[in-house]
Length: 322
Ligand code: MTE
Image (cartoon, rainbow, N blue to C red; front, top):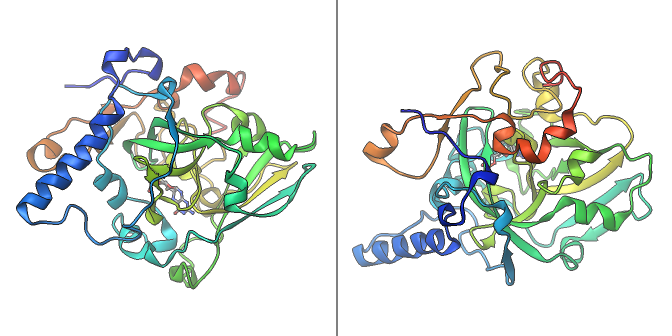
């Protein structure tokens, strides 16, 4: 059986998973675990996360699917600074110190400089959005992200007309990220967006998931979430944002240019050279029989966000600009 994933715009109010359900699912599991004398979560990185204070639910960005469990979302990660295995980041990212944290704003903008993250965050009201994120490896998750639109931050720093792209960099620090002594990837991990992609209302800077601060393995203390693009565009643990004139270099494009392009829009019609991209395994957090026999789901153009972003690519050949 093929499950068709509806677009966000297809969601009826009654279809949308209320926030309480996934939060309750977590407390229900915690209570059950406590009653049985077991621990809900392994003692992974950054277990003692703080609540984020006032967060408004933005119901415009909800999806009909039940969110992935917190446990699955925090134990199946890609964060090569902490290892290449899916469970490595959860096991190793405890060495990352998300505070104090500075972010440099550089390039063609009226306001630039290095700022303490908390000063950067101060003017932004936090909201929660449930987005699908699909990895190029053909698995996907549904996650309640907390953060604010990247566009709001960009406007504050007043980029000039020379700013055609926005470039992002992850921390390089071999004490906090000891595996950066190995050349798994060229460090720092870098990513970029065209200015109109960066300004699109969907593009989100996230500081939390499931109502709490980002666990280290998910990209603490601040990461990008670009839900219509393959997951590798969603760069983690950002320390620098630059407004640049030329298309910036990106890590996976440097690593394998024939496999990973600059745009990396989710596109079921363009195969990865080594596998198809028209289906995906939805990681729900279900275990056992249910997980084993869960059918793959159809991948939608722009990951189901075509109404919001297709106009950004009008007239472009998406096979060439993959
Ligand atoms: N950012 C950095 N700095 N390092 C990485 O290895 N992996 C990317 C992206 N951001 C990565 C990164 C990839 S391949 C994916 S699929 C997503 O993070 C995974 O995000 P998640 O672990 O929160 O699901």
